Length: 234
Ligand SMILES: C[S@@+](CC[C@H](N)C(=O)[O-])C[C@H]1O[C@@H](n2cnc3c(N)ncnc32)[C@H](O)[C@@H]1O
Image 1 (tube, rainbow, N blue to C red):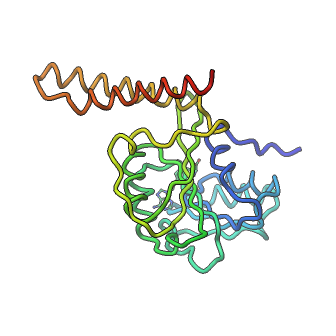
Image 2 (image 1 turned 30 degrees about the vertical axis):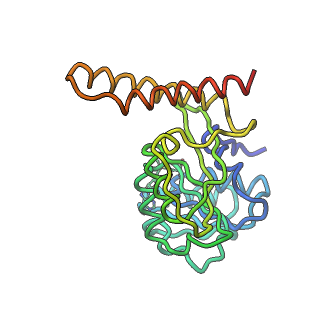
């Protein structure tokens, strides 16, 4: 059997892809995610894009190696710019910063359509991405947490529904409570990392005699959320 196993981070993204999808992987690099989805029979075909030639060449080699060239289209392009009109139903944008993911979505109006699914895995600035999504008329349907290579990750699934929302900073920072299969233990780990960062920021500000109200409020909210999840998995 061919080894196309994914790590927990990309497995979270794979879990959000719909059965029978026409799948696009933006910033595909090695093409691990689409190869896994083709091998497992979850997707019909795939469109892979990358802005850099090296990663796209690596994707092409992998696709050829697994014998999927006839079901895959490759595009050297920035974001989703050349991916409209290809019938894609589910787009993944994984392993990039939250601001870059936001900019890629903002530059591609064909992603803001009812029924199109976005699977997003921001490495940084998750709250910035959530704020953009809510403000641009997307709903975040679910979030899952994972742990791989010593780090915690969040993966979100969003769809356009046209209603713009303004969401408070605590909800943007903490994200959605994952469902019972959505990595609740990993979510605790993810929040604990955040908690330590806010405690360090608070200590730094306190030393400089600055106001620490925002950090204190966030620390309390994170601790409350951690207790809530612990209660839900006992
Ligand atoms: C860290 S890799 C992530 C690979 C894979 N998506 C994953 O999650 O494992 C980021 C990839 O995104 C590509 N990339 C960066 N900016 C991009 C953009 N604006 N449009 C398309 N691809 C981009 C990079 O060339 C690189 O191959």
